[in-house]
Length: 532
Image 1 (cartoon, one colour):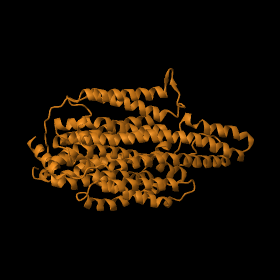
Image 2 (tube, one colour):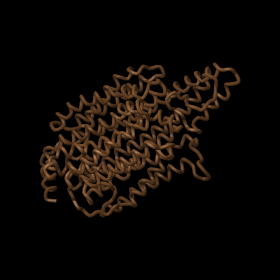
Image 3 (cartoon, rainbow, N blue to C red):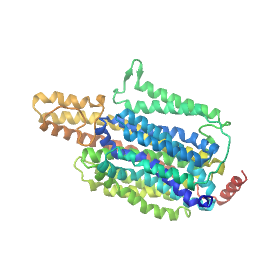
Image 4 (tube, rainbow, N blue to C red):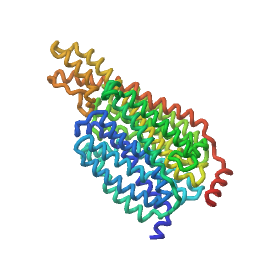
C-alpha cells in the first residue's frame, strides 16, 4: 500500500479524474437543456437555476473547503467530496420536477466544492518545483477538456439514454474515484489550525443570490414588483450591498484568516490569472448557453448531432494544447495567453456571424476550430502562471480563490447572459409576431401576438421542437409560430454573444501585463516553503 502511494503520477491521475467529473458537470447540462425543458416542463429561467444552483454553491464554498483540507488532510476531504457529489448525482437523476432538480444540483455543487481545491496543495507537496510546470499543464488541459467536452459527451448520453443519464453516469465513476483516492493518494496532514469564516460564507452567498435572482427572474416580473414592496431592482441592490459588506468584513479580518485573503492578490500574475479564469468561466458558459439551445431548438439537431458539431472545438484544443505544453516552460505565459484569448474571441465572433435560422450545422466549423485552438493556449499556461511565484503555504488558499473566481465568472455569465437573452428574446418575439401576423386570418392575429408578447411572464419554453410559447393554434398557424420563434431567437442570440467576446478581449489586454519567470524568486520561495 505504501509503495503504491509513493507514485505521484498515480495520485495525480485520481485527482484529475475527480476534477474531470466535476467540471464536466458544469457544461454537460447545457446540451441537455432542451430535453430537460421538455421532460420536466421547465421554463428557461428554471433551467438557469439548474445551472446556477451548482455553480453558486461550488463558488462560495471552495475556499472554506480548502481550509478543511488543511485541517483534516486533503485526501480525506477529497474522498468526502466524491461521496457527496455521487449521492447528489443520484438524486438529480431521480428528480421529478424542476425544484427537485435545482436542489439536487445544489448538493452536487457542494460536493464539487469540497473535493475541487484539494488537488493543488497535494500537487505542490508531491512534485518538486521543476516538475510542477508540466503537472499544471496536465491539470489545465484536463480542466479545459472537461469543460468543453461536456456538450459532446452529454449529447451522446441524452440522445441514446435520455437526459437523466448525464447524472447516472457519475455513479460508477464516483465509486471508482473514491476507491482509488483511498488507495493511491497519500494521507498528507498539514494539520494547520484554522478559524472557518462562516459569516463570510453567509454574506457572500446571500449577496450573490440576490444579484443572481434579480438577473434571472427580472424578465418574468417585467423588471418590476415581485410581491408587495419587493421589486427586482431592490433585490439586486440588496445583493450588491451585501457583497460590499462582505468585502468590508473581509478587509477587517485580514489578520485572522478571512474567507478572501488579500495577500494572494499581491502577486501580479496571480491577480491577472484570476481575471483570465473569470473571463473563461464567463465566456464558455456565455457561448454554450445560447449555442446549445440554438442548435437543437432552432436548427432542429438532436442532442448527439449538436454535441458532435461542437466536438470540433475540443479536438482543436487537444492539438494546440500539445504545442502549448512544449512552450509553457520556455516562454513568458502571456505569449500563449494573448493569442489564445483573441483566437477564442474571434472564433466566437465567427459563430455569432454564421448563426441564422437557416444555417447548416457545419457552417460553424471555422469558428469552432479557431476557438478550440485558442482554448488550448489558455488552459495550458494559466495555472502555471498563476501559482509560479506563490509560496507553498498559500497554495491551498490560492487554489480556492482562483477556482472560486472562475466559477463566479460562470455564475455571472449564466445570470447576465441569461437575463440579456431573455430580454432580447421577449422583444424579438413581439416584433417577429407582429411582422408575421399579417399572414394569419383576422381572428388569429390578436391572440397570436398576445401569446408571444406574454411568453416572458409565463416562462420561455425553448425546448427542442418548441415554438417559444403555449399557443393552442391550428397546424398551419403553428408553422408560422415556429418561424417567429426561430428567427426571434437568432435575433436575440446575436447581441447576446457579443458579451463573452468583449470579456475575452479585455482578458487578452490584461494578460499583456503578465510577468515572466524569475528564477531567483522561485528558488527563494521553494526554500521558504521547505523551511515552513
